[in-house]
Length: 351
Image (tube, rainbow, N blue to C red; front, side):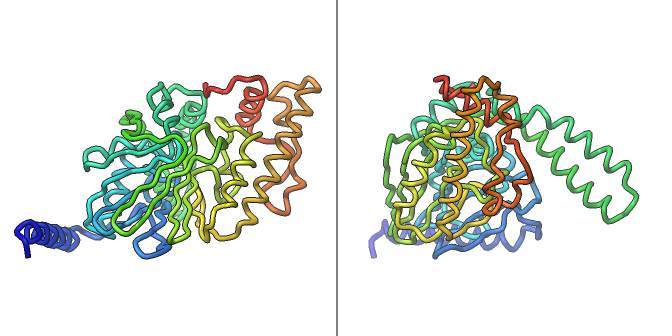
């Protein structure tokens, strides 16, 4: 055995020993994620409700390193992910892949730099994260209500007398306060490596493909494909249910066509940006139908002279209730309709 190989074996052994010692010495704590094993070394990291983690990640443990897909909404949530990954493996985290630039998936990026990870994403993601995304219309629509939401939870806590319900509200308040504090730490951090249409990473015996299939949820969505395992991580191009399908920076007219390209990939399991992994490809077809109907109705209402705000109230997609039971009546998110009108009028840059 060569001296170099002996040294490598020794270093790996010491890392494993250190990891096992840390595992033994670290007190039990609730994980911020539940890990769903999808294949050997491949885990969906799903929110566990203990910190303000609202989106999914994918953890890919390779022969010699770890690749992570998506970094969550804050550096604090990203650090919780990094800590939780250590319950799976001591291997170093070499790469973080951004599926898109939105805060709930990419504002944890900065936490990956101290562990030595390179950040990889579509060139559009880098472009957007180099702008002042903290003042974007979409981001402000999510974070500006946080103080009022926090005060509302405080009022609920003060009015509650049932001990069990009070304890649940206290947990919600703790998460909300921690989230408000974590927002102050964010420094949008762009990818250090970019690609345009396709990129392959070979990590030991595993191939990881990054694919840009077209615009949809944003102008630069990446799907991450593991061809051997037939697993696809889509970010928010595909989500678990309609309330998660934020359209405020989307291209609703192009989104169904991009989804059609997803359907052409040979995959068995999808890890969506939000919600549990699934295998039913018909769910994507249902989303396509919903989006096409939304775009058509929006165009009809715009031609009638309705404002985006009035159109948002009038849109009626309840014909899709059989596919999406949470559709209780007419109306869509006004932010979605404002964006649709922007796209129809040629204002394509997020604002």
